[in-house]
Picture 1 (cartoon, helix red, strand yellow):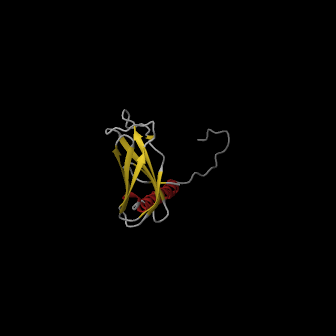
Picture 2 (cartoon, rainbow, N blue to C red):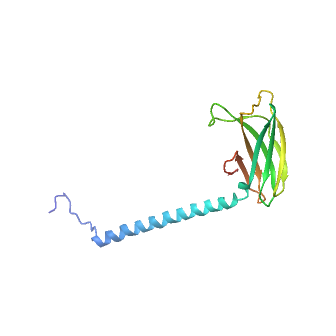
Picture 3 (cartoon, rainbow, N blue to C red):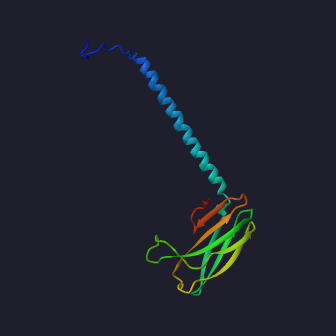
Length: 162
């Protein structure tokens, strides 16, 4: 029965043809998604491998009096780290999730050899008076032996810079 005003001569094919076409499209989509997942996993593994040395570099701040901080930067890896920048930050006591404020200008160390630590004494700016209960965070930026630049804030994970 043809209810259209013109003659319908389109050949829509058979059910097996439709299954074949849909199956081809689905298989291409599955291969694409699998490749995308594999690329993402390899990229994550590569970044994890690059960050191995960066995870072994840390800094700890200790309050000495009301205007001096003792910052110890430790390199527990076997290779040296270069161009280390130390920036002490004060965590707001009323809002631990808030934005930390800078306590002093950034201090720099050219090189810390493997399995060594470097001790820095930082004088806090005049507008800040430290108390023993204050939480001090150290923002650390450095270059590993492969030339990768890293940033580590407090005890957090290192993040690639640039």
